[in-house]
Length: 239
Image (tube, rainbow, N blue to C red; front, side, top):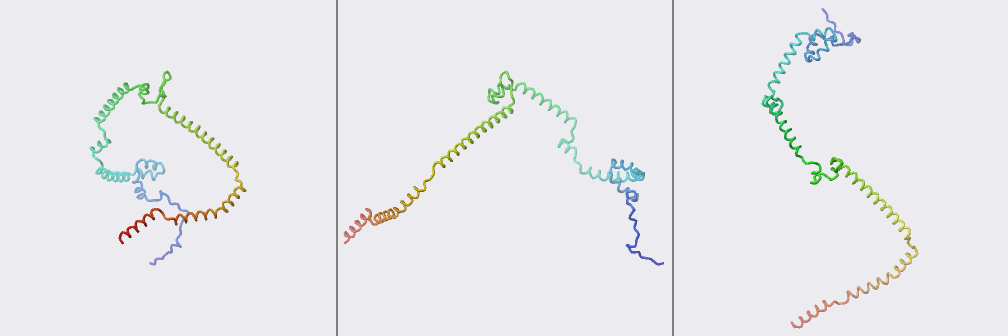
């Protein structure tokens, strides 16, 4: 008996063959369908006879129930207790519902009593709680938010008027300054004559100033004279 080795390149392949879900074995299909829920299995029963038979297979549902029981047993071990559910207001008993409705009724009664004794808009305006624009006799009352919006609009209007006045004043001032600059033209001849005169008389003034400063430095002050006099008097007394 001889074995003939066939190279993979020599194998014949059918490129036109299509791999579909129905080409898989039934065991693999049952394993795949076991991960689906009941709402997902219903559409499969309408696709083909094979998937319908597999979806209704008792072995499939037995596997699903076994897996669900394992996950359920694990979930039941970590579920919170009834006391924790009641503490977090997740589980509400009838007593809790009755107490809650009773509390709501008491709050409603208190609120109605307080609303009956609440002050009127006119009294709030007189006490200074609400602005005077909120209430006008014979015309009803206006919401404070509307009054605030009206005041903001009025303030913005005043700001716009002031901005216009300031801009107009600045424009007039700039025009006036430009006119003053144009009117005051420097006389070049006068400036040149003044500069030459200052330059000619600068040396004499500098010399005179230097001479006066030197004389001031050379002239002895009264304090120095008195100091020298006292020194020589002490020298004479010591001799």
